[in-house]
Length: 259
Image (cartoon, rainbow, N blue to C red; front, side, top):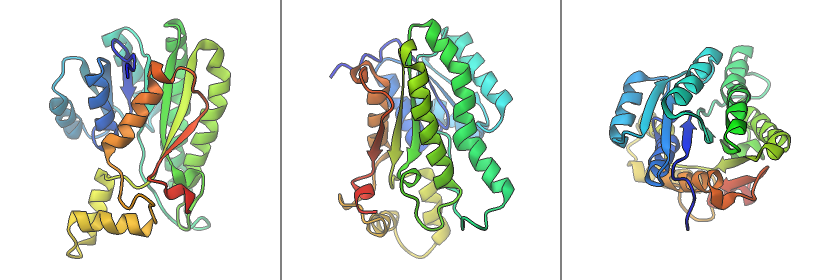
């Protein structure tokens, strides 16, 4: 299938590892120029080096900082002349009891998973409009649709992100800007790798992920790969999905159907 991504310019927040890095690699392979950002400058440099492509640029950026987002947008436009694709991928999985999470934790999570999307939209929509259209893909989680116990604030902020994406999709459709969401289930990631190491209970990495798949009752019987999520993101960002907007695609091995 021809995705029509060649020559496009994509910005990926949280692009230094996991799904973000896999998406950058896939978009580069499809002929796009890619700007990745991350807070950790050393990890950012390693990510750009691993991609090893002159069409890739790394920009240090904290997605919760409005000024950093302005700098990210400006750097992408200065280097490549515009932006055609935005992938909102920066995020963490902050968990706690809904009635016990403090204001600071709520605010940080909302800044990262909602306000960063809102601020980036204000920046990229005029840029995309001037280029005749574009695509926004926000990477959220199935917990935003069906929260589990102890999943605050992350499930609430992702639900807000989902609502925002759907509202935005209606507002910018006439500008030929499409907005879609990928809702992730349990995927092998840097964050889950950290949990495996922190558990330090003698399980191999493979055993840890097999247990995760069982715990979440994933019908396919395994956790997902970052590359599988990246494929869904690339499709929704591409011309091949030209008649899809305002949608939310589950990439979860069927887990959402048994929650």
